[in-house]
Image (cartoon, rainbow, N blue to C red):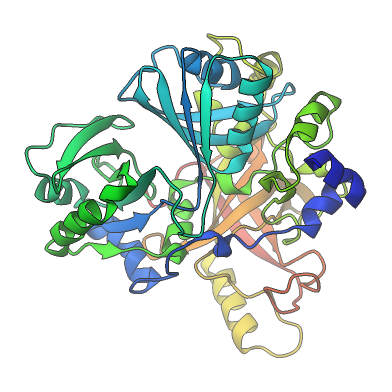
Amino acid sequence: MSLQDNIDAAGDALALLRGNNFDVRGAFAYPAEHTNWREEQRAWTTTAVLFNQTFHMLDLYISGPDVVRLLSDTAINSFANFRAGIAKQYVAVNDEGQLIGDAIVVALSETEVNVVGREWALEWLQYVAQKGGYDVQIIAEPPTRGSGGKRFYRWELEGPAAAAILADAADGEVEHIKFFHTGKVSIAGHEVWALNHTMGGVPGQEYSGYEFFGPAEHEDDVIGAIVKAGASHGMLRGGARSYLSAGAESGWLGPCTVAAIYTQDSMREYREWLPTETWQNISVGVSTGSFHPERVEDYYVTPWDYGFGRIARFDHEFIGRAALEELAKRPPRQKVWLVWEAADTERILVESELGHGETPKPLPWPSDLGRDQILVGDRLVGVTGFHGYTVNLGGWVSLASVDTELAVDGTEVEILWGDWDGGKSNILVPEHTQTRIRARVSVASPVA
């Protein structure tokens, strides 16, 4: 049995996806909050917060002489100078230049990489490696609910105190690690990989975050040392609610992807290769929100919709290159932030919580993956993928893709807020009426 079998049984891909809608909040093996999500959000801009990232993502370990060739042949970005000590975003598209998914690739050595992310891009990598005859070996570690089964622990230390905490936790001097590079640090007598990158972001600070990983059997010693070092710096532990809300500041739309694989004849063999239980049976948020198209193709996006167009490089041959080169001349849509009008936010908050009768959809504190229509008048000009609030923003924002000509700071639009059927098919929210939220476009994170 395969994904294609599931699509055939459901009638079409859209029926399958809407029948298997997934609440992403159930994907995490650790507490929703350690203190409270507002203080955890504040910590990544004032002190530091420590997140456990070990269990909720798929890990691939790919080794062999064709590792870099496999990545280069399937990624829109260049791997020409990829080597040990470097990490890269990995973005894959189909033959038509539409997004399949993204992930993070870390070079563990000259011939082994760790690819981490959601399933969309990683399953595609496995398929191409197998069907293309690449000389590689792949070990896949699926997401778990915290029951082990992972080669590496993986934690994120985020905030302006991250460098000082690392220095205090380390056994010796810590060498400078460039952004999106890795270095090795000794903590509690164990060798630890440290990747310099950020989730939320501290504007103007290079050292705003580290991702730590190493052998699972060393986890308690290493994380214990980091927690001890962080105590004097005011570090907090972060839970799932604050972790999920970080996208409001970082702008990452990866979890919202509907991989562009469900309808093309050229993708049929891939759909037949994917097993019945694949996560490609599930797409987050396609049953909720005011955007409710009749074709699954209307959920497909290009790399520019998610902010990945800037990393495309045409210095190598890759799947989808010809189509992407044409799209690059005039991308139809661009990723933006939509900053909600405070008066509309307050109105929805009061009416949904204190009103009677027909009331708006409640605000999903602190974040939600939801596809809502973006309108100028009655004209559809884009679609949201994520709504979120952080104390650092001081208000609500949506991550969205809008028509390219509207991707200009200050452009005024409206979000049609509320599910397409008033919540009748969404057990997570009460029934409600749709309303409009005024918003303005920001092409960069408003927290900056």
